[in-house]
Length: 180
Image (cartoon, helix red, strand yellow):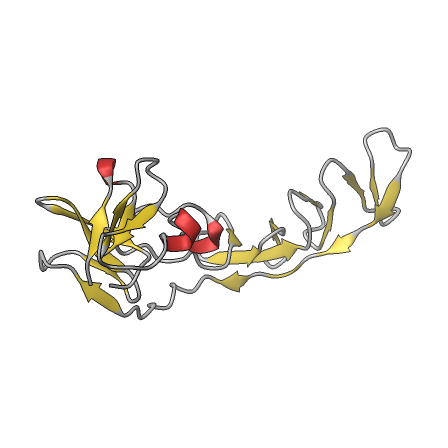
């Protein structure tokens, strides 16, 4: 697959077209027919103006909160707290206060009142029941993601399947989200 880089190497157009003077559109070459790509605009994923991609970017894994031991983690928007058994547990709220009994926790900016079984606001004017932490799980290494790739002409760079290798300089390639 081929594409044509635009000035500055930040955008590209499919083969058979060239970059418009506005730097935002692809104009069909004379004799190639057709209309400007994307209604005159280069469009990338998510409807944004298309730029040259970086080879080998992998989407981020679902987020989790790592616990201080480096081997346990809690779901996103939870807080790691040490449990009575010495293991890590998860309080089901972000930036929670872990209670001294190592069983319960309270929302951010509240304190544990274990005698009353409540979480108190700093002014003492509002309280909510204590929450109970649940066990954290052990962190798993991310599973390898199998990506089909297009090898660029330099034999070293690769782009995701469905993208085009776009030569940015005599020694550097980028990825354009266009086929051919």
